[in-house]
Amino acid sequence: MKSIIEPFRIKMVEPIRLTTEPQREAVLRRADFNLFRVPADDVMIDLLTDSGTSAMSSEQWAGMLRGDESYAGARSWHRFESVMRELTGMPHILPTHQGRASERILFELVGGPGKVVPNNTHFDTTRANVEHSGAEAVDLVIDEGLRPRERHPFKGNLDPAKLERLIAGVGASRIPLVMVTITNNSGGGQPVSLANLREVKAICTRHGIPLFLDACRFAENAFFIQRREPGQGERSIRQIVREMFELADGATISAKKDGLANIGGVLLLRDDALARRADDLCILTEGFVTYGGLAGRDLEAMAQGFTEVLEDDYLRYRIRSVEYLGERLLEGGVPIVEPPGGHAIYIDAGALLPQIPSEQFPGQALVCALYRHAGIRACEIGSVMFGAHAKMELVRLAIPRRVYTQSHIDYVIEAVLEVAERRSRLRGLRIVEAPPSLRHFSARFVELT
Ligand SMILES: *Cc1c(COP(=O)(O)O)cnc(C)c1O
Image (cartoon, rainbow, N blue to C red; front, side, top):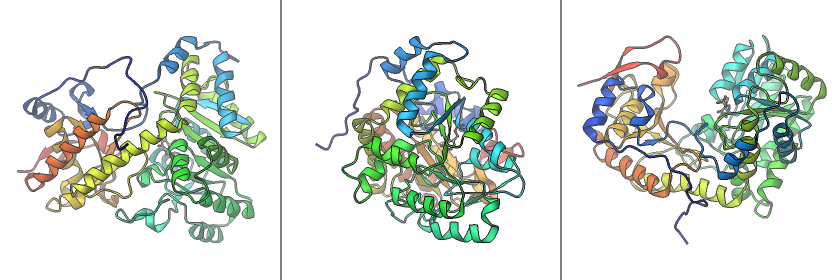
């Protein structure tokens, strides 16, 4: 059957306030055309991010009540630890308040001036933590991963030849670890194959360099491997996940993505000495090693979330729903990053709105039009976010997990296609006030006439 049905039913609802176009016009003006300044209550479909926005299950909420808030060795910690150990096989498991806290601890330990950290594509907080330590962050994704229209089953792969060249150029002693982001968030949520992980691991082993995963979307990545990689179709998601982690010497994870939780992170380590030093840093700023800055109930939500995310029915629905959104937009002539990734669809606003030059922010123009027309909040990833460094003018529709139904997705499709139909009427914007860094969060705009 073709219909995509949600493999869950709804026990609790959160009303969406339906607004009119004139109401949204007023909101948009009050927010100076910056969607980060719009109150969430004024948004109908919020696709700003898939991070921390998941709906929790009845079992997760039940776990919240069972949470043990003991300072040390809480029951909730033991449950969380055993779930993560079974999932990954990693000997050292450290909870943290978010993925970036795991990154901060890791790069404080292994980074520093003179060091070079390769990744397929660094996520922005990962790059920031590498650079904050004084090290240099280098992106080595395969060339296909840099071309939006080019189809490749594993567009997130790290290029082994580029890695060999980097190691030959700077020397293995300056590379404290190689990181691979699964799925490659900044590259459009594109997966990495097991074959690529094995090849990168072999190079790392040859040069004595540890391999780490930025494993925020490990379950979505495993699903793509099961579907697309020769010889993997008969294996379970759990087996594939286990192999991905067995190839690694450690991992950072944000539980706000595939952990199906609203907060939380994990740092996984294989090396005993490194783990002892990580424990000390965790205690310094996060909390004792059995709670890492989280409440016991958060550990329960994470333990249950990291279990539910592996279910075949859930993953099939999740990936199919995002793919369906991408297919309908392509059929309607809307250019997107292809093929659709795991957690989001990226519209190529630069290609859709050729009349608006980069200096007038075509992505921001599209984001504003989607909000004005349909109350949808999307995220500009282009010249507003990256200034002159922007390589593309993208608009990301990130899909929160288990939050919106298929009819919400159909509404989004209808809205994007209607906005695309009147694309010639869209106008660019000008920044009237912006802070020196991270300007996308607070910049104020006016629309050009
Ligand atoms: C979200 C994310 C992070 C950071 O996690 P936070 O929980 O937001 O701190 C790191 N890497 C990737 C790939 C991510 O998607």
